[in-house]
Amino acid sequence: MNDHKNTSVPLWQQLQAVAQALAQVRRGVSGTAALEAVPSSLRPGVQALLFQALRQLGRAQALRAQLASRAPAPLPDALLCTALALAWDPDNAPYEPHTLVNQAVQAAKNTRSLQMQANFLNACLRRFLRERDALVKATDHDVHAQWNHPEWWIKRLQKDHPDHWQDILLANNQAAPMTLRVNTSAISREALKTDWENHGLSSQTVGEQGLVLDQAHGVRDIPGFAEGLCSVQDAAAQCAAQMLLKDLAPASQALRVLDACAAPGGKTAHLLELLNDQSEVVALDIDPQRCERIAQNMQRIGRTAQVIAADAAQTKTWWDGQQFDAILLDAPCTASGIVRRHPDVRWLRREADIDKLAAIQKNLLKQLWPLVRPGGRLLYCTCSVFKAEGENQAKTFVEHNTNARLLPSLGHLRPQSRATSAVLTDNLPGDHDGFYYALLEKIPAS
Image (cartoon, rainbow, N blue to C red):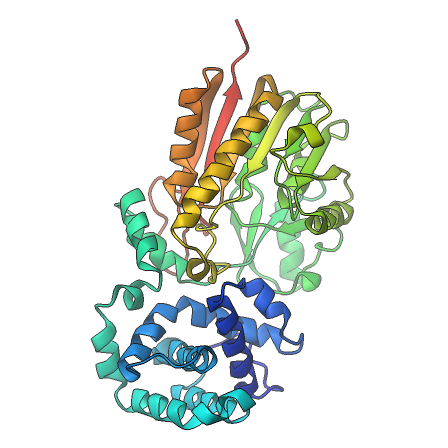
């Protein structure tokens, strides 16, 4: 059942808002932007229902095709698919299927632009309730219904991860947990975990500094968050700063570090928590508004970074000519590894996006590599499971740069959910997103 039920707001009103958000996602608007237009009093419940609808959208679209030979206009279609996505599996429905159907029809009747479609929606959904088992069975062999991903995405995973593609898709359709990174420069993980328990928050350890909450909470309600003792960050992303700095230099040595695509600042904060006070961190992001988020994060943890709004690839516009000991390049990518947290991504992306983003990644590597001092490191990472944005990118770079050496790296981490399976072999233990890591060392000239 839905953890975000808002009994003070009629369900029809929430479904109305979900349908409007879904229609926007189908037009290419991100789920985040679509939800920002929802009144704050409605947003938690609407987000929970929208995310569930997006995770079951392939099945819903296949069912809608069984019920209506021709797709309705965008908004009534979005409302119909919302109701089907939420109601098709009674065991996982956030409300009783009959309730969802009644309230979806009510949403149509109460929306001026949908009133003419209310009878049509009612007929489709009543038929669905009567013939549910047969309709679901008729869609079972539809690849979109089975996996709730675009077909090109599924084929790409089958090619890139022939032994694990099903595990990835199953994990993608589960909600991600709330994972936080403990600022161990200020408090031990055990001490913070105990403090949480005293406040009724239970959690499990993950990785070296992570805690996974058994139940998500608003960040303001989490003891230590406002004081900078912890930050929200997935377990896979927590590996970045640790891997870049591990055994790079004695703890007492001051280092100069660049976080090249830094917003919203989680990895920048982690770097500062691991470095000594004499070290310097430069945080870049192309978006000035997102740079403000970096500054806010630094303020919360009580540390300082030099934040610059600039295109990392245009080094002449921001670089002072002084090389870095270490560079963290979390490059723009398809975000195919974090669809548990952003279920809209699978429906927003197009296969052509992979090549476009791979070209940007290649150029960033090319432009930033000269900024690494001899003997220094660059950590290339993406929150993608596609090899064109990961393994292939790093392999090509090393082949074309004789002064680059690939150090032991995590490579492709596949998304993994506690709800679907045991820990997969050659993956990190615990619950985490999909990521790719390649640690590159610049070989000094002999």
